[in-house]
Image 1: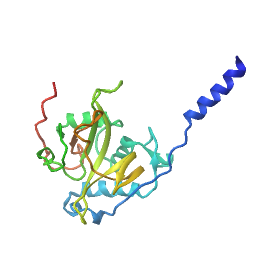
Image 2: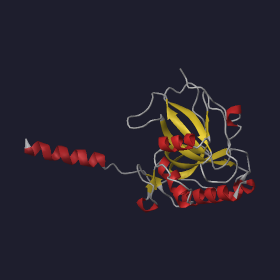
Image 3: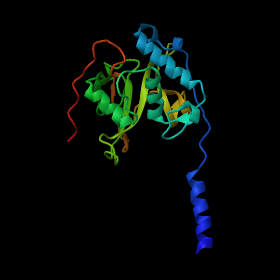
Length: 223
C-alpha cells in the first residue's frame, strides 16, 4: 500500500504545481487615452500607476498582489494600484469586498441586462472607475456578493474611441489577441445569452478624489 501511496502523492503534488502561463500583455501610453488630460490629478496618477504595471510583463498569478511574485490576479492588480496610490481607508482585497466597499460609500452604479456600452446605464462611467462582473449561478461560498471579477476603466483610445480597461486576466483579449497577466484589455460585455457571467456594475473609487460623489439609483434586485 505504501508503494502505491507515494507515487499517488507525487502525482497530486505535480498537478498542484502546474506551471503558470508566461506573461502575454499589452500596454498603452497615457497620451493614447482620449479623456486623460481632463481628469483630476488623482485619477491621472492612478492611471499612470496602472499603466506602469502593464509594462512589467507580469503573468496571471492567483492570490497575488505583489510585483515580486511575478504576477497578480484580477483583484490583486487593482488592489496593488490602490495601495500604491495611497487611497484612504481600509482597502478591501477581494473583488466582492471591493464592490461592497463602493456600495457602502454610495458610489456604486448597478447595471442589469446591459449588452452595449452606449446604453444609458453607463452615462456616469468615468476613467478611474472600478468595473465588476458577477456569476449568474449565485454567490460563491465565503462571499456576500456574486462578484467574481474586477477591473479598472481607463477611458477610450484617441485613435478609434475604443474603450479599454486595466487589470489581470488569463484569457481576456486586447485587439483580438488573448492576453495573460497584468495588461490593458478591451472593455467588452458578456453576451445577453451568456448563462454564467454578467456585467454587474461600476463605481467611483471611494476617497480617490474630493469631487462630489457621482450617484445613481441602483436598479431593483432581480426577483
